Each structure stands twice: as structure tokens, then as C-alpha cells.
Image 1 (cartoon, rainbow, N blue to C red):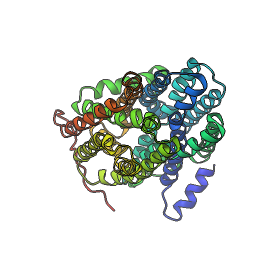
Image 2 (image 1 turned 45 degrees about the vertical axis):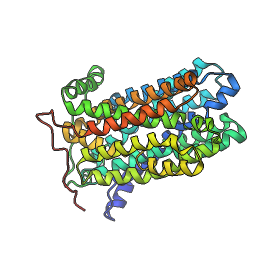
Image 3 (image 1 turned 30 degrees about the horizontal axis):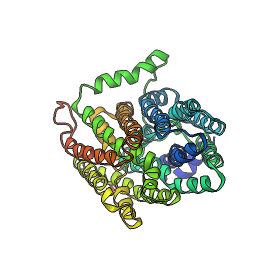
Length: 435
């Protein structure tokens, strides 16, 4: 196989194949995230073409976000049983089918089926749980940095592609704009098939930072065991205060990012006279600064107390959301918001993954994080629907913005309580990783 030959070539040059797997995962998550962010530029065109209400469209997007999160723990179980490459390939095929089908939709129920259900399931199988699984399997050293890279790809992909999608939507229509997302998914699928491997042991390698290859754990061979394992992980984790604090703070994380800003940003800016392409450009700035901020967060999470990192991330995000209405949505004010908020867009993920891995163990970390990520997407779905309902009911998104800012301040305070109620909790801080 190409991957085996490439692994030997890199090993001769003292380069671990884990970095190839990480890069492949980065690009796959980038492509699926770009498809995930496409509805942000479709709300107004769908309203204009079909006369659908914001609440109607938001309900489909809310279902997508719920399934995006609900699939997390089960995707982790599928990866543990069938392997990463097989699961990601199936997920990409589902996303591709949803995108192609949406080119022909004419009714709201078709939007709910294609974007809510099919794409929701597909993207949920390639969400942050995929990055957490690759990072914990392939890396012992630099794990926080790798998680930061994966998280950045997911968030940045949803934002950076939006200006191009918005420009294409304005010039050639939303259907042809979606063809860009189709092309990205096809390319990602080819890379996964050629380069992805499930574990370092498949190539006779140890994880990065270890000396000996670790044999893969025994897989659940019965379908019942496969479906029950995420529920068993939830039952065990739910006895821990750490789990519930991480679940609750991640709910707030999703509420204040994917659900509110990503889904409604272009419409929100349009209410203040900002053109869709200009609003999408601001999202791209957020995405670029998120790339730097999240990778830096991964580096910091390898070295400092992760509870305090979450305290600062949530606190600063809350302040930025509360101040946003005071900018008057001028281009200068929006640019400053994009820089400040972008550095903190999903910087919360690396510390959250590390805290989950420290508390629940390496092999269970992806299952437990899948349920924590479910909290993230429940928050995102709440904001996606609630933001649309606020606009329809109050002719303004401002109540949703203020609610998100206040919740972030609450999350900052909750982060400092992590681990205090667990008798077996691992220390929240981590010792410096070797250079």
C-alpha cells in the first residue's frame, strides 16, 4: 500500500507517519467543515427563491446540529470497531449524497431531510471526535498541539470558505456554489483512501512519543456491544462531576459559536446594512485568527492548567459578544471583533479534550468526548433555532447575543470547579511536554 511505502520512506528520514495521518485528517475535516458552513450563505437565497421563513430554515439547521453532536459517541465506537478510514469514507459519501440531493430540493421537508438528517449524520461522523481519536491514538507527545490543529481545521474550514461561497452565490447562484463543496468532499475522500491508517500498529510503529508499538485493544464483535459501548461510557462518565461541567461548558461553547455566530452571522450583519460578501469576509478573518488561536491553545494545553485556560477563553469570549452591539457594526468595529473573537473561536477544545483524557483514560477518551461534544451541538442547535426565533419575534438578534455573552461568563466560572467533586480525578494541570 502507498501508506506503508510512505511510512518506510519517512522513517528513514526520522519523520513519524503520524504527521501524515494528522495532515490527512486535517484536510478531511477542513473539507467537511466547508460543507458544514455552507448554509450560512444559503438562508437569504432560500428565502428569496422559495419564500421560506427564517424559523423554517433554522429548524432544519438545528436538526443538523443535533445529529452532528449525537453521532459523536457512536462515531467513536464505529471507529474503534471498523477503523477510522472506513467510517470516514462512509461519512464523506453521506455528505456527498446530501449535497447533490440538495441541488434539486424545492420543499422545506427536503431541506430537513438532506441538510438536517443526511448531512447532519455524515458531518457528525467526521466532527471533532475524529480529530480527538487520531490525536489520542497516534500521539502521546504533542497531543495537545495536534488536537489544536484538528480543531482549527474544523472551525476554520467553516469560516474561510464562506467568502468564496458567498461570492459564487451572488454571481452564479447557490446551487453552483455548492458544487465547490462537492469537489472538496471528493478530494478529501481520495486522500483518506490513499493515506489514512487506523493505528500506528498497522504500520508496525509506536505512537509518537512512545518507544514500542501498542497492540490494538480487543474490538466488540457483536453489533449489540458496539451500540452499547457508547452508552456504557456515558453511564460511567455521568457519575463524574468533571463530565457534567465539561458537558455544560461545551453546551455554552456551541451556543456562542456554531449555533449563533456561524449560522446567523451573515443575516445578522445584513440587518445592520452589511452586504453578504462583506459579512462572509469578516467570518473569514475570524477563521484565520481561529487557526492561530486554536493551535496556540493546543500548545498551551500541553503546558498549563487547563481549567484556567478554559476560564480565560470563555470569559474573554463572553466579553467580546457583549461588546459586539456597541461597535455599531462598522467595518472597523467588526474587524476588531473578528480578531479578538477569532482567537477564541474554538480554543476551548484542546483543554477540554485533555481534561477528558486525563480523567477518563486514553482508550475511553474519544467515547466520553463524543458525549461532551453532544453537549456542544445541543447548545449550537438551541442557538440556531433560538436566534432565528428571536429575529422573527423581536426583529433583532441582540437578545440572543446578550444571552450568549452572559452564558460564556457563567462557563468561565464553572471551568474552575472541574475535578473538585471527583475522588479519582486526575490533576487538571499537565506537566510540560518534552521539547
